[in-house]
Image (tube, rainbow, N blue to C red; front, side):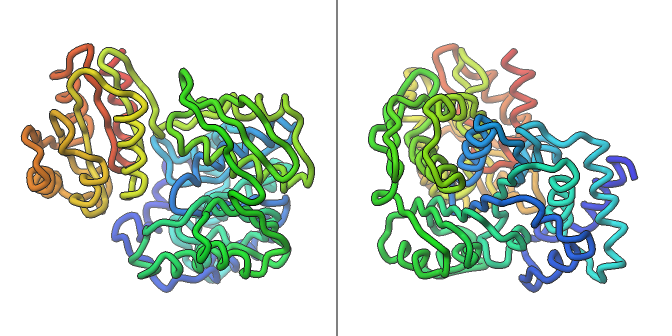
Length: 429
């Protein structure tokens, strides 16, 4: 099986990506598949991460801190921006095409033996665990795909279970309250797990305290971001853990929320090692973090930014960073496509404060049609609304009308961010 055949196999097993529906939530299929492989998910200790927002950034920070500590790190995240290889990395390097094809072929061969038909995400997850075992990583950093309890990644037994925060997301599968969502996310906590909680709501924190983990530390009690200042190219933060105060640590990511994510990541790695980290390790780890598609500056004159905000909470943070940290002086131009209620997303993005809004259909079967996004923008009070056939066309038209002093923000979905990045690389260079 070559890469093309592997991708065709995965596409044939896609359901959620096409419909937004999950049939019979269960970890039984992935458990049986992993069992047929010899349970590779248990080959290395795991730091397991869930939460409504910040999972991807926290996973990358944890990865870099572990690498700076001298460990070989396997990282599994989702979704990808441009290439599926991005989802599984060894020491931050994506899996090669041949290796990915080999791992997917192994899953395909075991499908009949295991007696299950895995979903797209289950097949990828099993492939990642098998690859991590093959390349003998020292630790795996695993990001939950959806909620927690029934997520395919939840066949791991987390040494450290991380909860970044809780917001209203995936309410088609959990809810209607934040407490319901928290209980689903608490499902990743196992009896031997040390739990790191970035959420601060007392009611929700109590759900995680009583979920059966071996220990729990909570933001504001065991760790916190003491100072979180805007710096050139990112944030300058002071971080307190249960053992140490790390001062003036540079995090090369934009937005105050990344300083908060840094505190969670540092607490998780300290918990994993059960000891403080050397100051040089902390500075090297955070200093090398990269997060494509998360408030990523891809061009200047005009300032051009891509952000994969995909829910209202993320969109709200995105707009705060854009307006409050960057203070664009010229015209403000929004390029947006979404998989969610466009009225809710556009309100969170403060679309009516932009001088022009270019709408498109997110490149996913679940993408909201551009005409519906446009109608929602006009209903919100946006005067200059342009409808484009694609993300690429929307980016091209937005940049064509932008002056050097203007700012262009492309956002609304990771699918939009993934499609925009190659187009913008061509347009801004």
